Length: 256
Image (tube, rainbow, N blue to C red; front, side, top):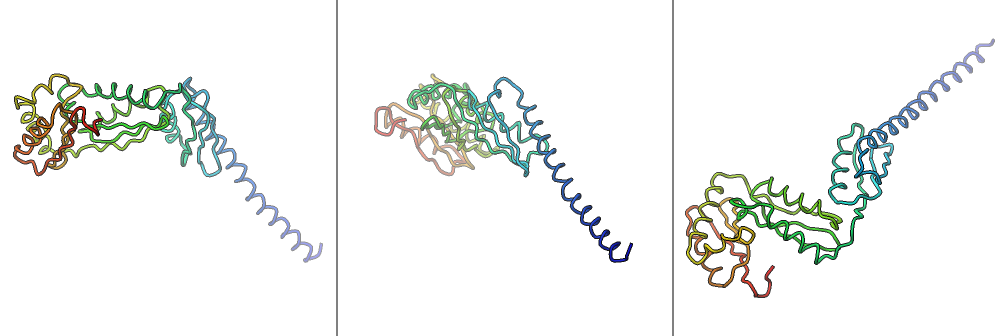
């Protein structure tokens, strides 16, 4: 065999080995993708996820499609898949089927339920707002802590007819000073003779939100005089820097 033939054969062998190194990882990567998809399906092997389809691409992006009966199931599926090893990102295209409920009826039902999310002492320190459009529920306003915010989100997420949830709730800062101001403002407001009746029904209190000494009042009162007095009482508390009086008067335009 001539030297040129030996050199040619060596080059062909090297090229074949190089091609093999390119092919093997591709097969391995495809196998890894299938493994990740299988792991995702295994995690979603529950009755509430039975109509969900899974696809994992070469970059580890898991696409979820199909339907669920509650928004809570869509959110839970998203959280579960994010934790699966090998999943780099989640594209959640799941549709919430469930019953068709009018926006007006859905809003009324949710407002009734949210009213009693935080009963008793802590209820006056939450002022959570709610809007519904085409089954999409947007929560806003203030909560004085994360557990109450999470409770509100749970109530909405488990309600049939809710298609999606937007969380714009602001959680008030954690501060011993603000905690003291909340209690002092509540005592000043509810301790005033013409306002203490608003403490009788815990579902309809004058709501007090405090952020770094800044006080905001929310809710619905019976008269302009009650609104004015509540603002004056809040302003009288030591340590309060300012007061925004968002109280609405029953029967007047803009009442919510």
